[in-house]
Image 1 (cartoon, rainbow, N blue to C red):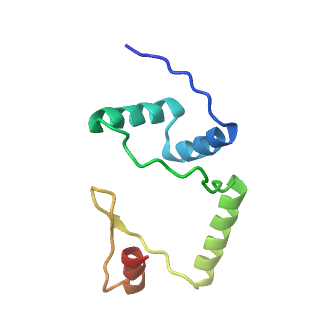
Image 2 (image 1 turned 120 degrees about the vertical axis):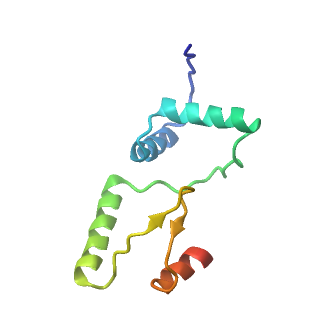
Image 3 (image 1 turned 180 degrees about the horizontal axis):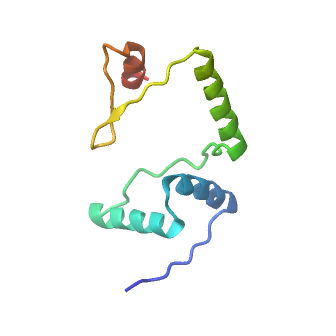
Length: 109
């Protein structure tokens, strides 16, 4: 059986959420279902409430400009592209001897 939910939300929040969800391959219905399932599984609010202010998600143009700049860095040889392995938990696996700076950044920020 399927139940319907109707929600009113700030238009800007919805637009930003739509961009994030699209990048994750999710629609609003699936995201809300996942959220509700987490509430049921944990028996409480599944995460700490987020602050009211959240920076805007970059526009498609900003993302394309960043991608272009990164590609220019790679093409110029000023940076190296590193492929990382990821654990089943979604954690990056980094060879600290091969990439000490990257390892330090991932561990210490």
